Image 1: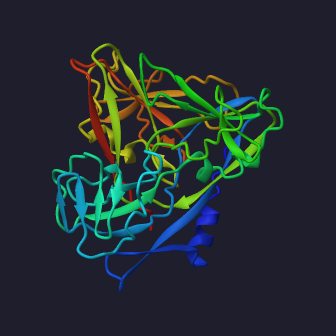
Image 2: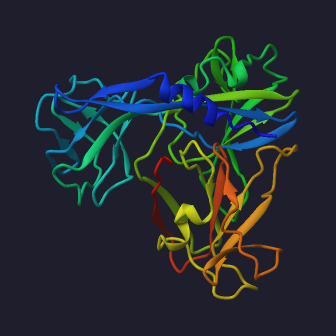
Image 3: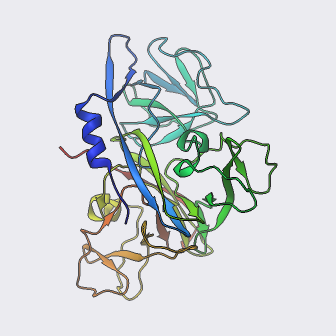
Length: 353
């Protein structure tokens, strides 16, 4: 059974003033952000489809003064020049647009000056003066699991107990499709097929993307820590003209969310079913607690006649109150489209009072 300990640890973080305090554009202002933690069970000899429930603590919060081309300008020299530059051609931070017409978008930072962010050819159309922004470090294997998943370090790389499997975020034809496999050995993250002396600590865990933790041994518990994200989050969804696409995504929220609270059904990017016998877009859930590898979805939902329905259940029963657990990776199955393209779902959420 998954143990979601956010509620108790969240109270400690809130009432004991365990806050991440970061500067805004003005040196006179500060912003206190709530942090928390979640414990997640990893059943023996099983895969768990995981979503990171938190962000890393933002390095900066402020507002945009203007945007030109692929550059966001601030009103003052609020940054340290070069602090957010790419490392070895790989972005280390992204900018999260927290308000305005581009809210929820996350864009990789190429470089920065004291008063500007360069975003490597990104289209910033619609970004307006005073739109709130934050600069956030990417989660990497090394920052999310600095001592390995569940603090486990391999002793025999050829007989691995714990693996992190990155999958194709958009799987044409459906199903979990493994892309790269990593394990923690000799003090660093290693990649299957690469030299055991090469570190992959800087391997990015892309925002809004689910991944798999495979536990080949006895029961373990993993812990997630970070900053609670209350801003809107934009989740990219692919669709294809050659077949259905399973988009394996995460919702970086630290509490359970009911299906109706997702807002997916009225987002404009999730196709509502008109024939209950032929569902179009579907929402797939993968159990956090059931045992087994290469898991299939435990439930498939579609939106029909103003409510969420479950495949295989009575069509007159509403499943609006079914929940996505904190830390649960999900898949949004897009039906075959007339043309291949990318849509964006913006998830809105507020911390309950």
